[in-house]
Image (cartoon, rainbow, N blue to C red; front, side, top):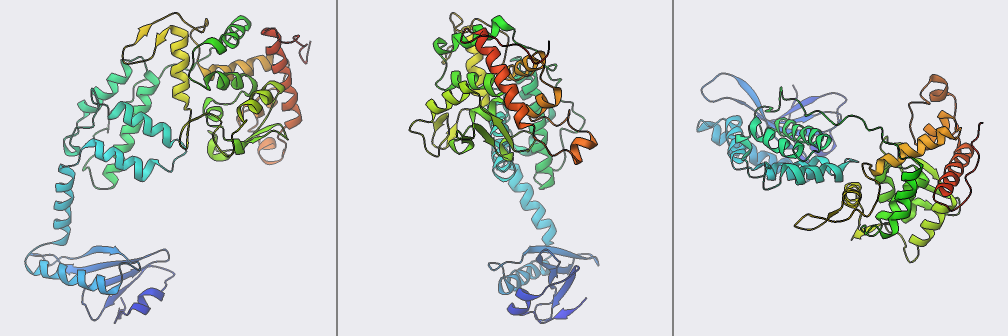
Length: 419
């Protein structure tokens, strides 16, 4: 290993094609480890009461942590070693002390800040963790990290499942397991307490499709259903676009191209990470034009500063309207304002696809409209066909839109593409 009287200039400019350690001749034991991607300060030393040579990482090199600071830290560590203090043991003891005072609330919030915030599903994961895992009644927030036990996790997940939210409970378990494994990787937890635990079984895949009378009942009841502002327009747009709920609820004015009659969803807003252009029908254009009046560079359904309607909020609103539940601290029953029960906003997407199929729209066009890749995943489509079937999709959207208009009495139902 090369020895070098390290200088600020050398440290700043040295590069390596492979990992190389440079030992400082002025401060024995101080090492600059250089790799193709980074530089790290460390101290090579003999452990007190042992002949074992080892290395203790001090810090990553940066303008703030340069040569002078590294030499000073190396001298401090060597002074402690002379007194019988092993830097590794001191670090582990400090981490254990910090963890012993750390609550799960603090750990989860740190996880959200450091890991979740850059994920496409950040809002959804953060909401689930805060609502279900950190709630005061059955949550884990007050549990000290070193005391976390399986029974604590089971109690929190059972509380979610007892609400009848089986899918939510399963996802919450996956969330808390991810938190625990992240904490283990960072040395905050010594072991994965979720190891061997099984997630609750999710609800079976839904197959709900609204029939003609139900579509009419839902759409005609929306204006007087007493829903939160914007929810009725979201639902109506779902019938016209077949989009996912979050895609419509999170619409921004910059994603709407009225001139081209398109919604242009960027990749980061789409579940499969593939940008998606959605053709607009005449009813959709009319709704969007009305909503965009006096709106510039903002969400179409704003709920506050730089926030928009969430899919779970829309789901709750529709559930209350279908089942006659009034919001507030006390849940009170009232007359249902939507006369069709047992459906979710996502079922509209399945309903649209079913109608399109019944009207003779080809499966690959329906798949393209839903931005699904499975139907078009053959070698031919994956590697050779570069066609978004926009013309066919526009025709399909107009066909389904006209069919729905006929059902609600706003136009004549047109004939399907095939007999």
